[in-house]
Image (tube, rainbow, N blue to C red; front, top):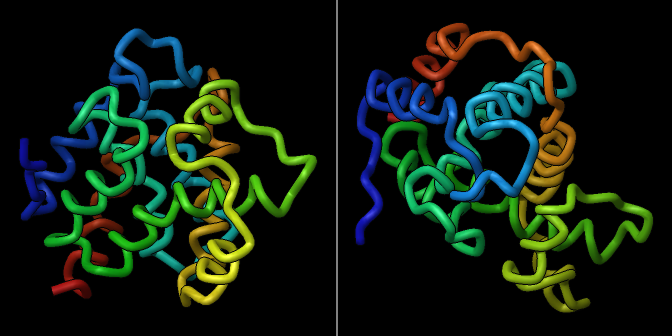
Length: 183
């Protein structure tokens, strides 16, 4: 089954709105917030820590839509999301989305006291586990590694029940600006 590619801001907004009430696991046993609020929280955290990097913020907004596009594919969700948004949001956003799983594996290998949500700890195994020394060296050589780590840290922190993350519509002009520069 092919992953649909998003070709307009309106298509992406519709997809993001459809994340309300959708979860990272089909049975809702995963993270405590739906994909809608998780994306908004992640993007908001990145806006606070990296206010100049709108591409990183938008990557945070869309990084987990792969769970909606292909439910149950934890190992491939980042690739599915990246493939879906690449035509609209460009290569950098897509690569950041794709790298949020390797960044998790990198941090699992380099930060011993790192705490993951129960679901994220479980999926780490299906995503390859902590990186080997060779994988860490390769990851560190990626020019987007530090931005991917920032995305991963916001991803891990953006799972707070009851936090008001703002509205999806607030992100429309940011998405549109990123899409304009990606073309």
